[in-house]
Image (tube, rainbow, N blue to C red; front, side, top):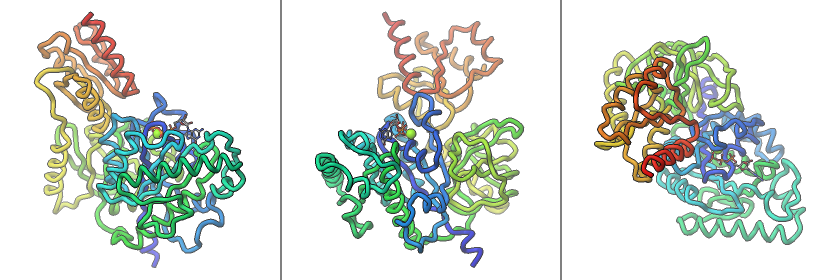
Length: 451
Ligand code: GTP
Ligand code: MG
């Protein structure tokens, strides 16, 4: 019936893998976008989301795809590969129904490839391996956007041999980690074997094959899943809190289960504690657009999982990026508040007795920086989400060690009122929108101070 089609669940596909192996490039190729070119430091530092409609996928697969496919499309989640973002990767992994593990075929398995596989194994997430950058294999003759097998057949023998060798290296590594795998065209049962699809995110070769395998997994997932249709209250996660011109404070969220409607009461984690508010508007990014960078949205009155959405509601300036989000009723509101408070408590960062202060734009990036610093033997006494305020300077001034009177700000602003106050204080502030540069700057300064 019409309601059933309307509520059919869009599977969530998480794209994971080692830094620079080509996750965002692959999504760019599928979407027809250039998000990669706009990323600070040329790395991904946030979770992203893009809805790719079935039509786009069909257009890329051509006659390779079976006619019986009924899914509405796929919601792709982009994750950072940089080693600092472990929490964001496991959050992405936890959200995923399916995954694409991107491996640079010329580099093979790297530390975050293995980390990603462990996450997928933990959550029992079916996945396909995209063996990317085949165009970098010596002698590869590209034929843009063609299916892998077609391109492969036309290659010289030594190129074919190189691809085979590299593919079997991946098979070996997967086997070490407990997965049976093979090149996708040699697999019949994708529930028992992991398919490896050689692709190039640059030339588009192999992407039709990858999407075909993925749609197969998605179709199977929906058939097996009790969650084929969604009807319950919306459940999601807040990606970012943003002030938008003309709209005020908004949140970007992924709704991974249930339904959310304009007028619904939602519970979100806040800076101090969880709070409730009423959804004033739901803005959906255009299909094939990354919610992280998109500026044009469609207003909708209701939304079913899985979807990325920008939400307008009063009081969102207090929302905490990285917190859970749930639709509640008048009756269960108090219980949901308590549950979210419990979840936020678990996510709270444990600080040291002494150390420096960290401010970051989201819970995920805050955790990433704190973990990086700890790894480098640097202590953190205060860690919070949000811009750098006068209150932060005052707090930092209370730090007993002169060397600790430092604030590292990742992707945050120094508020105007703070700047003047800051000049009169002895607090050193570093800000950057690239995680490793921020830490490098601080370490350089720390070394100079010691010498
Ligand atoms: P993080 O998000 O930071 O983990 O990186 P990523 O996995 O998203 O990699 P990204 O898409 O940013 O690509 C990294 C670099 O590899 C960029 O310079 C891309 O242009 C390049 N690249 C990606 N895919 C291919 C490919 O298939 N062939 C070639 N030759 N280069 C590629
Ligand atoms: Mg990326």
